Figure 1 (tube, helix red, strand yellow):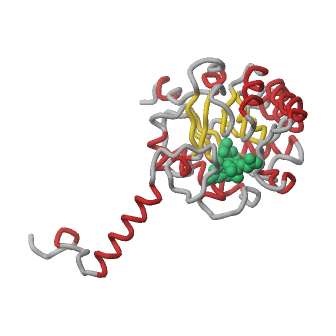
Figure 2 (cartoon, rainbow, N blue to C red; figure 1 turned 90 degrees about the vertical axis):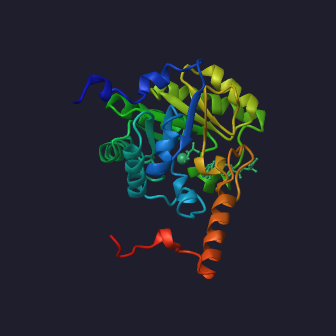
Figure 3 (cartoon, helix red, strand yellow; figure 1 turned 135 degrees about the horizontal axis):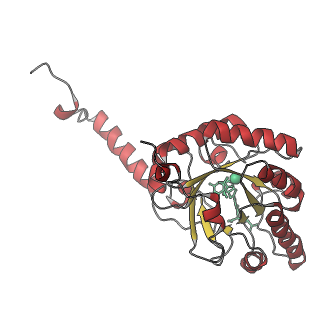
Length: 273
Ligand SMILES: Nc1nc(=O)c2c([nH]1)NC[C@@H]1CN(c3ccc(C(=O)N[C@@H](CCC(=O)O)C(=O)O)cc3)CN21
Ligand SMILES: CC(C)C(=O)C(=O)O
Ligand SMILES: [Mg+2]
């Protein structure tokens, strides 16, 4: 039976929007059905980030991530979850050219993954596009500060706002995406006092990553906080050591195979009733 409660079981966009200044919003990335099912128990929203190009596919930046890859991982995460709001990143080259292009690709992402919102990078320059999408039924999470898809312009993943002269621009970006109708904004890789000013300047939740504990929520790349990636940015706190745990398991398996200890009697089939 499909009840009203089942239909509205996931956290909604207005619920996230209403968390401004309230209980901190918990978020992680996920690209994978089974890990997403675990994250789903604790996160208010899950981001299927284009960081998957780097984390899952060994790319050096997010610039090469194709739309179809975002859709495939987005679908997996939606299938694996039932409570969290699912946001899918729009990859580089699928939204910058025009509001029309952005709508076409955002609608494709939403129809093919059944996610609840999309995220795109850029502040004032994306104001018109964000408004165009929101007015037509597509909730948008914005992303300002360090915008990884612009790595080739910035010459790397550079912390923003070290120079006080740039603060007005970042604050104007936050205000522009708010005015355009974004329901939340990721504030990435900015000095802490700038993150605090941005959080005070807008009435939508700020989601910090390498930003400040005063942001209205926090996000990290799951594999980074699990200790699976060999190198992580300074802002990551490791809550696990999955890399070493996987290595130990693989080494134990290799030793068992070499010693003919695996498979054991419990791991083989026999013809007795
Ligand atoms: N695994 C992973 N985690 C992330 O957080 C992440 C991705 N991938 N891919 C997309 C972007 C890129 N991100 C990054 C990548 C590197 C730095 C970095 O090298 N930071 C330097 C600081 C440089 C400076 O201060 O200017 C550091 O040492 O932490 C930061 C953010 C964040 N995002
Ligand atoms: C780091 C987060 C905010 C992101 O955009 C991603 O994972 O792609
Ligand atoms: Mg991203």
